[in-house]
Length: 398
Ligand SMILES: [Zn+2]
Ligand SMILES: [Zn+2]
Figure 1 (cartoon, rainbow, N blue to C red):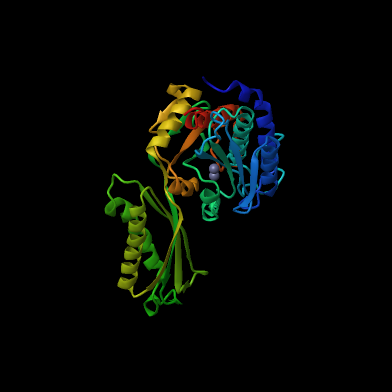
Figure 2: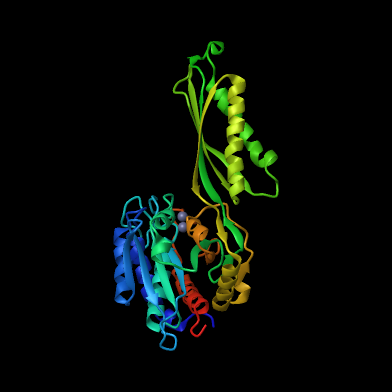
């Protein structure tokens, strides 16, 4: 069975919902209109609707058919879509462009929301499964970790599930194709700040001070050796210095320099290594020059790890909907990050990439670009994938 015909019948509705959401983008924890939109639809189709988790989060609960009159089974799974937009000024000029200046759905979360709504509508109509599905509409995926907040506020205590699934569109991959992998799929995301304090002086008399710029410059070079000389070359890590702040004028050596950056990797133990290696290098260089170091390393999103069993299930369902040739099991991991990782720390599950369109064509513009748009042609595929995932994972009589 490729796509689900009943879902194809309301493709136009999904497109209309998606474009409505695109016109009204809302950023982290302010997704009030979006949450209202989602909640109203879910309630209209007869789902139990729960509001307020992580401020604007919405969870819709749907029970399947009864099994032989003995309840509908105790098994449950979670499906998650993100709802938030980005602080980007949209440069598209089509009819559904953003009406909120400086905000834009440039990551396709409008499409993710519409596809999960499409699946909810179909499953509410058919209920051809045994057990319970929790449709998790999450706020603040970008930067703010709405997924972490939902978990901290008791997502899985309030809505117990045996597994949880996520999906993201991916420009550059043809529409109709999908990719996924067992294990590490997206990197952890951490930030760090290095403050070097020396001693200010007249620029013509540097020997009377202690130049923090020279010290910080050596730190910038030396931290490159973490990836190239300290960590096994078969591991993937990134340590990038992205800010270097020091000085205000031509003839003054400042007393302080501040470096900031980000670290990405796929393993918890490597995060610990990177954190301590930066401190060791920066501390050693500061000590060698008589400067002092202040160091802050902050863990943001963990690496996203797909469990083996659930990834197998997801791959099978994707192959059924898209055709086996169109599903790449073992797709390469991405160094980007995703807060669905917090949900996967709590429950087994799988996060799949659904092609949004190849480069140059519709849907091929990269996410976070002011010209990006979600490709409505893939929404039937995404919603069919969700629906079949439920029917496969929670089979009647199973
Ligand atoms: Zn994004
Ligand atoms: Zn995204």
